[in-house]
Length: 161
Image (cartoon, one colour):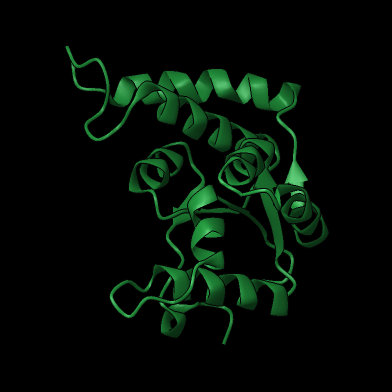
């Protein structure tokens, strides 16, 4: 698995910096997943939109956080190839909407737009996998042919043990 290219969503980064919570395993799962990827030399990529979302949520230390992101991850720009993929992603996303509906349940236009940017970037840069705790993003990515899932529980990391 050492040659895999894995794209991660904002929520994975957010959970990775949170303290562990005994009532929610997402922080522990995100930390363990990223740790195992580093140990196994998995190439972890962050779409530029994910970096922007993450830095937007940072306090005054966002410059230091930005440096650490660049040191630890490959930040992937939204380029022309991604723009071409974006059109296909938006088309597929619209097809998933129920007839007469203006937007999917539990979603909004800006979130869907960002999700489409993330998926288009992953497609354009040949991601092997997209990791997110956002089920809407995972489902759309799967529909578009990208392997996508949540970070697994630490006891279920295939290829890492």
